[in-house]
Image (cartoon, rainbow, N blue to C red):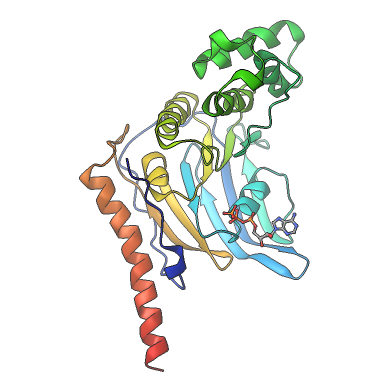
Length: 279
Ligand SMILES: Nc1ncnc2c1ncn2[C@@H]1O[C@H](COP(=O)(O)OP(=O)(O)OP(=O)(O)O)[C@@H](O)[C@H]1O
């Protein structure tokens, strides 16, 4: 399948498209609810997020897109509690009303090379009693289809298999929010599609809230309930993806939705050009 990417260079200014109601139904159990209000984040003089607001219901799968350097990973790190906002509010509420547990998966697998696969997954189990750790880690490896590789070293696995181990490690503690920072970015197209299906199946089964940063619009549309675009430090496009799962790659519906997103971007660029050429 051809992987489409946005013509980000055409981006200047867009109108916000509010999400429509979801038509596929799914019981979200144990997902975190995310409320972000007017968040700003600066690194020195560089103001990356400029009053960004986003409300994510429990169990929703949100894809975050935008051109390189627009602040996608910064937003994800704020959500995963790895950074503090410079101002604004950010809360993550768990199903029981307490603070939600979060895990993050990066583009690089970040596995420990000196630990076997199963031991790498056990790293994600923190305070779990030792007796339970091995069984839980093996169950997580089974979830990602790698139980038979439990005693291998990470170095003998393929790139896709390593990312599956990283996913199992993140899933091991049953987080209520999963932050995915281009987790499939380094994989070949076929492995990528297989991993997308795996992530979708696990998300449907476990019910966590998922926030996926990706450069790939087709990937965003294959997986997400909702796609948001960041531009100039704010969300400038917010589109729901009301299609049944699993989604049929190359379907007319997906192509239409991809066209809708691209149309918004092209319209914006066109308007911007006109304004510029007729001051
Ligand atoms: N810890 C940091 N210290 C200083 N500047 C940072 C830090 N983290 C991010 N930045 C800056 O913030 C901006 C946004 O970075 P970020 O990684 O969030 O972008 P991104 O949209 O995820 O980019 P890409 O798609 O290329 O991964 C960049 O200008 C980057 O240099």
